[in-house]
Amino acid sequence: EPLRLGLTGGIGSGKSTVATMLAECGAAVIDSDAISRATTASGGVALPAIVATFGPQMLGADGALDRGAMRQLVFGDTSARHRLESIIHPLVSQEVDRQAKLATDSGKTCLVFDVPLLVESGARWRGKLDRVLVIDCPAETQIERVMARSGIGTEEVQRIIDAQASREARLSAADIVIYNGAGVSLPALRESVQSLLPSLGL
Ligand code: ATP
Image (cartoon, rainbow, N blue to C red; front, side):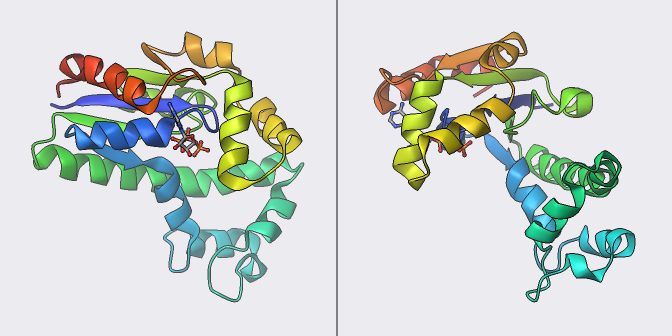
């Protein structure tokens, strides 16, 4: 059985960068966000149940979920939010399991589950994972990186950071921590990743 590693960290912490490095070292990376988005894209497997539950006005002209309409509907409505999640989560879980099985059957020794909101999701992911790797980074660096990447403002990045799990909560959920603050160059980050490989079955 391959090692099942959860990979998480705040916005701009460097998760995708580390996931790519781990993939280059032979890990299978399973991207939970991409899987989740695909369930509500045009033709997505969650759409029939969403339409049956919330109505056809939840679909945009392109046949995908109208995210604005859905956001409005679940905003401040906990019950609607839970109904939406109870449609999407099992479908995401099914697809994650399917990809994990494919990777296992193809002989992968390490499966990396990239889950941005792993800590926020509570118990939902824990049963699938042997270890949790947290990419740790101070808020100042998160803000710099996200602004450089997307041009959104300091305050908006700060709002997203505040809505996510705290740095402390993430660190206390971690089995392994990679520090990726402003002083860490990409080669230095790569070295941190390299030094973990033996303990990850890579
Ligand atoms: P998000 O949650 O927003 O998707 P993320 O945690 O996946 O972010 P990345 O996309 O890996 O973060 O990194 C954010 C940006 O910072 C990217 O442009 C990446 O190239 C850059 N970056 C990450 N780590 C470093 C580093 N050590 N040195 C220089 N640039 C870095």
